[in-house]
Image (cartoon, rainbow, N blue to C red):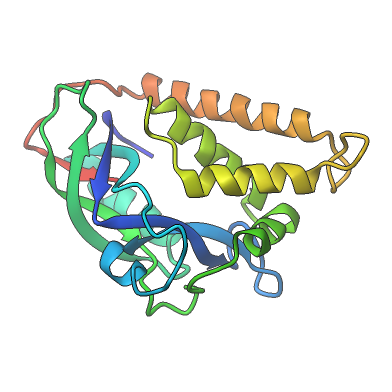
Length: 223
């Protein structure tokens, strides 16, 4: 994805949950995986999930897209997020160590409760069992979860997501048998090391593409 700046930070008024089915990337139509979506906090509070007080900040990264590439990036993201996600706008707050100002209109893709892939409140262990066994055209569902966990951890202190971390631990447990072997035949620790290696490669690719430049008015921002 073409971008010239990556800004770590957070949004508010939302809760991140693995309550979206994935039939086209991390699962199949006959065996859907589970992927994250953002849920408006006011709606989430009506679902009766416990604990009832998740973190008030949802961490992630905002990407600045050069105007000359906005069209192609938008087309790519629209295709990637076609399975139940809709465009919304919200304010993005850079981390305290960033020199950047808040982004008042940051584009995000959200699986609204009205979309057919939104599953509603889910039992964490049930979600973990689906993730542990699911595979789709984009790869293993567990890889998606571990990559997200690693990326959030790398954003800095306080950026971890309790829901994501809990699911990751549950999936690790499911993927290991008494001999330390993954349920799909591989070594669980080796699989996680490969996830970390790929995450680092993706980060370095972002650096090579020019992340770290000064913000400008001629750009669009996408979370």
